[in-house]
Figure 1 (cartoon, rainbow, N blue to C red):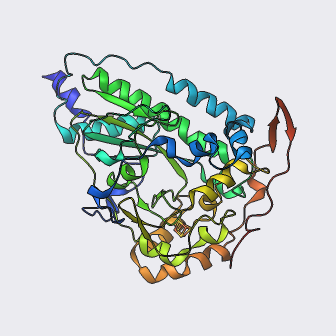
Figure 2 (figure 1 turned 135 degrees about the horizontal axis):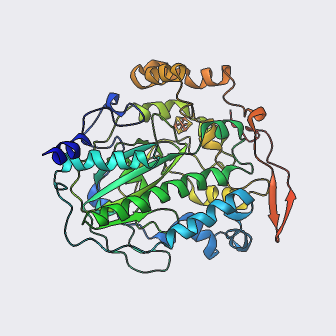
Figure 3 (figure 1 turned 45 degrees about the vertical axis):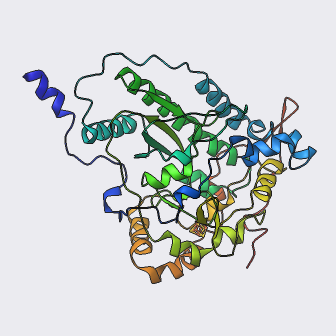
Amino acid sequence: MRLTKTYLRSFNTKKLDTFPVEILKKVDRPTTFIKDFDVQRLDEREHGFNRAARGDFGPALKKERPRMPVKHPLSASLVNACGYLSQILQNKITTQRAPRTDDPVMMARHIKEAAYFLRADIVGICHLPPYAVYSHNTAGEAIELNHKYAIAIVIDQDFKTANAAVGNDWISSSMSYLAYSTSGFIAQILADYIRRLGYPAKAHHARNYEVVVPPILLWAGIGEMCRIGDIVLSPFLGPRFKAAIVTTDLPLAIDKPIDFGLQDFCAKCMQCARYCPSGSIPFDEKITHNGYEKWHNDVEKCTKERVGNKMGASCGVCISVCPWNKPYTPFHRFIQWTMRNIPFTRNFAVMGDELLGYDKPKLKDKWWFDLEDVEGRLRVSQFSGRRGDHKKK
Ligand code: SF4
């Protein structure tokens, strides 16, 4: 009896999430219109970076692609860690299921608590949409994955760094791989744990994704699709995050998609399109592409900018300039509340950002070295100019 009481105490009703996700408006379907039956499963070989590696964007980019994530030493260290994560062998699924693991509400709460314990920033759960599974991996092997649920594990790329960076300077790739490696670490442990509880589970993270992340983030209530393209934007982190996914058959209560007014906001804002150095983010209306009605990013231009950047490692200008890229302070919480709930205030968000200086990098907070690995030797490198050198009015 005493043991049961202690066991039950872990399933309490105290507030769970780091951010107040409970205050967001929940909807039945994502705010991006998705014609489920028209969405074709994607082939991972057709991802922009893989096309660059194959030579689709020319020999110079083909040569540069393997260097891109490792030309800065910090990014190289994070990529190294990601590589080890993908080599972790899957433990066997325990034959006898752990007691009391068949209650979906209780287990969803427990799995989220476990993910937060492992230092996730946001966690959401949805049914795994069949179209979110890649058709083939980078080796050309067909992917079969029939798990029922997907757990999205979100990691912040760090506001202070995003705010100090120009966006396409030497820290950009490290910011991505910080979030890729940390979310991948959590996903691997969570999947291992679920298998020990007696259920199938698989971790998907940088270097071994078998699922397409954005539709999962939409259905799991992490955010809405934004103007940047196939990027989901969180009301608490903006576009400043990466996610790993665990797919499983463990019974889990699912979250609902959210609506915080982003479709209207992005229609008015266009800050990312103005600042994008490659011109890959559209000023135009949404179009329908592969069953999704969305703003369509020019993948070739975006990939060329990120892989071919000679004065930095990759690019994240759109992340840095987005008005949702803010710290979670009482002042910004209030501003974000107005942006979510009072549509006319969205017209002033960009103006407010420029008045408060958020359109410029806070270079005094810069903490990283502008180093570049050139044929095994580190040299101090020039970093890309001021943010907004390519700005369109
Ligand atoms: Fe949307 Fe503006 Fe952010 Fe671009 S910068 S994603 S338009 S909110």
